[in-house]
Image (cartoon, rainbow, N blue to C red; front, side, top):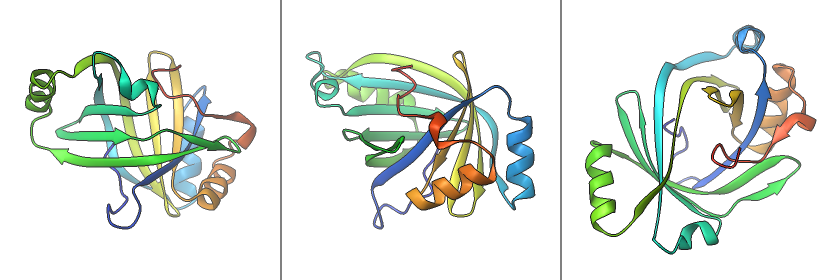
Length: 173
């Protein structure tokens, strides 16, 4: 999903991820709380890259090329810090016109695709957060991204518990 953060204001991604059995009640709660659909359900394809020595992975960082609908993104994520089930890390991201050409460039520079995953994602906005509804081969997940206090407020509004927050990335799951 393209980030709604402004690069100059904060390059830090802060999020909570929750496994859910269905999106029906979540969508209803988001909508009844004043949320709005920012991006309808679309296929998202992600490829993680690393050096042959896997130096980024060894540092807890990731380098990703993403296609989401008609958009392409190149993202570098720093090592994660976890507190209270909420994960924060530096995220540097930019849109790219052709993710396929970026993949070719990275491979020609010696980076190797390490992991590829796909999911269907729809994105909602609610009270200063972005809420992603992700359908993956592993199940359904809700990701709430924003400031920590806003994440907790929105989690309460949509009736998900901080005890259910997951800190693992999709590749780790």
